[in-house]
Amino acid sequence: MSLAELRDLFIVIISVTGIAAIIFSSVIVFLVYRRIRAILDSSRATVANIREFTAVMSQNVAKPLGNIASVLQGIARFIEFIIGPVRRKEERRGGRER
Image (cartoon, rainbow, N blue to C red; front, top):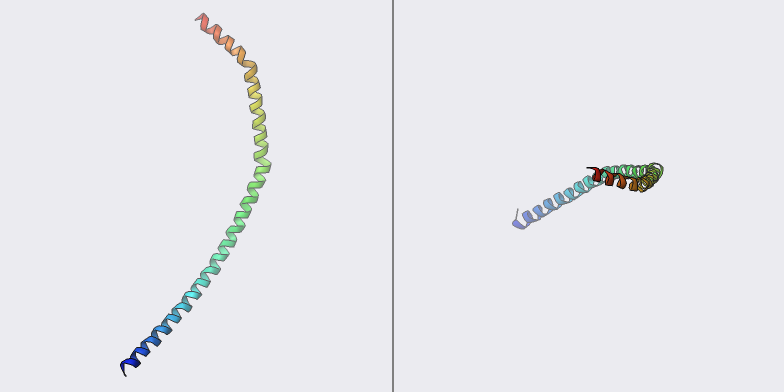
């Protein structure tokens, strides 16, 4: 066997090995992609459910609680406005008597 034939043989062996490695890698990538695609679809569905849940909670819980908090804060300020002058008078009286 001459050196040129040996060189050609190694080129053929390396080429066949490279092609086999490329095919093997492609199959692995495809299988991983199929598995990941299923996981991504599942996570997209989960995210959609979470968005829907938060929208419902915002409409049915957060807005009414915000409205109630606003009303309570208004009532508290009104009571503070009414009681404020009375407190100041009591503090002045208490300060003078001591």
